[in-house]
Length: 443
Ligand code: URA
Image 1 (cartoon, helix red, strand yellow):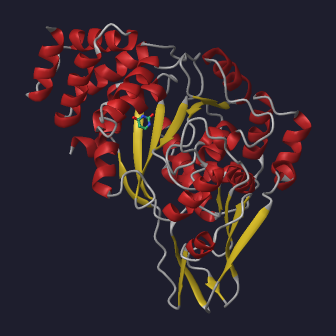
Image 2 (tube, rainbow, N blue to C red; image 1 turned 90 degrees about the vertical axis):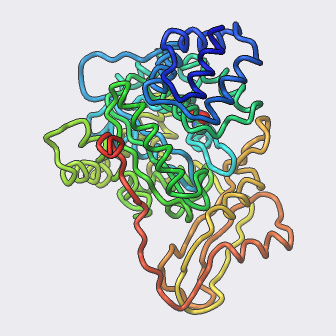
């Protein structure tokens, strides 16, 4: 039987027969393979891993199960994927910034997963913003504006949806080759020339150690490059929340501030890092310094903000409201009914923020979901007044929790443990830990 031979190849770490693998995956997607056989193969891959050519073939088959965007000749088509973090709002700025540099960005994004926020939930905090675009509507939006951000849907790599559901019930979610094929198939279906991967590691990331993150990053770079997409992975630290705003509407606010050329330096640096990686991969004659300068320019001169406005209008936001959103975002996005501010209990410095504790508290109050049917409260989240390393005097505000429901005594106590202060200024720790590209995967 074909499945037996595929499983045997996986167990013996041999190459799987290309045609048999393709037929098998198509069969799984179309319901023509028994759950028992699919489970045997998934469990074997989970236990023994998969060779790069097999990952490329699996990913190709998943792409071929749905629509693939195609582009006329022109500027490079680029995108990024993040493995998920706290305050990770980069897509909201990166897509318009790259569009302002003349690139095409057909971004597919997801909703919050576990404690991490999702780009789509953030955009849906903007009244009228429609993320449900068909593949044709994505192409039309990108041709018109230069970028769009749409929710992952059944039209793109539907085999991934079927495999993911099976992985969920067979305890095989946390398999590097299966995560790789799942993520890369959806990105490759966008018809990309270049892809940057933000692979996060730390206490508020899914991959807790750099080694785990490195393994996934290498696997995704190899597979994506195997499909002909120039790809770089940036390993970044995810212990502390990114920037000064966490939560759906609050992250839109923080993003608009960066697009206005102001806002959090931490947030801006990640956008510049990701955008410049895509530019220097796409244009071999452009140095990293020049690529950085291009992204910085569009953040400073208002053209990225203008692209963001145009993207909002293209995706259903009333033109007047989009105009107000980019000039006075607080008026459009609203504020939560209650604010609880934590004050410094001593003179000194803000030493560290616990991203995981903050994310868990925000999720409990409606910033994220526990089950699919949960309704998001877009206004819940945090604003950070004294970022890591900032000097504070006793009773200065450290951060504010924005919420709708009253806090219990335990929650008040928990809030006070989220920022550590001390008398010694902490060293600056850059977010970027390591860059992994096609050269490092060959090493
Ligand atoms: N995100 C995906 O899209 N797929 C995975 O398998 C894991 C994270």
